[in-house]
Image (tube, rainbow, N blue to C red; front, top):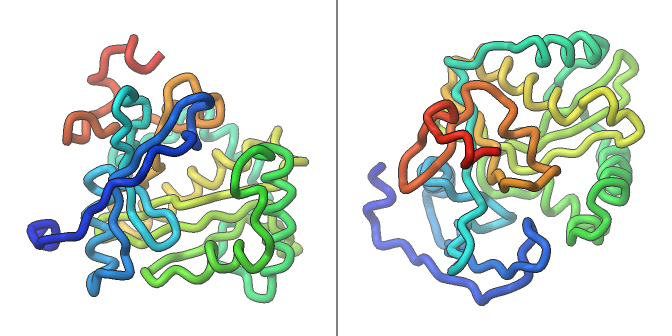
Amino acid sequence: MEILKKNLNFKSSFQFPCSYVSGKNEKRLYINLEDSEDKDILISELTQKGFRRNFDHMYFPICEHCKLCIPTRISIKDFQFSKSNKRNMKINSDLLLKEKITNKNTERFELFKSYCETRHNDSHMSKMNKIEFESFFYSSKNQIQIYDLVDCNQIIFGSILVDLLQDGYSAVYSFFNPDFHHRGLGKNLVIQLVKKLKQKNLSYLYLGYWVKDSRKMDYKIMFNSLEIYINGKWVKKEKIKSRFLL
């Protein structure tokens, strides 16, 4: 990790209302990617250190009295499709994961708005207009890929934005049609990416932060071969005491 040995310009934010845990304040260590000539390498190396990309910066929570945000990733080579995964794939066997379908920006935005209004109507994401969404979803200056979950008529059921890393993908943001939540579309997006990474012989799918007792993030801890970042090291979920995870 040569780039992290450079004198990088990290900054700490002011405290602001936490976007993950209601009633708590959040503080972040962050770095502006605009200042880096090696954005893709920096994003890869910081993601491996538990950071997360948001627009044009990478951040890591440094909250004074809270350590609930735990970075997670799936080890692709160790991943085994469980009975639950196989049921999900069977339910969604009519859907395919395709690289960004052209001329679908308006449809994708409308799906995003429907998803946010139904599942995250109190979040800042739900307040995005189309210009802001397109800036967030399409205008990254690093290497990204957008995947769409589509049926045979090319109707989008879900989309996911990932950063392309040296060792895999980092899932930046995903959304799906809330009218079909019973099909487990969010989970299917992850399963489809795991299959894609197996084909590409890459090592990890980074899922971002998991917060204990957050129902919105429960799906992350349910995947096998999950690793969590604690005390500067990635540790297999199975080696963590159950009381920490439950």
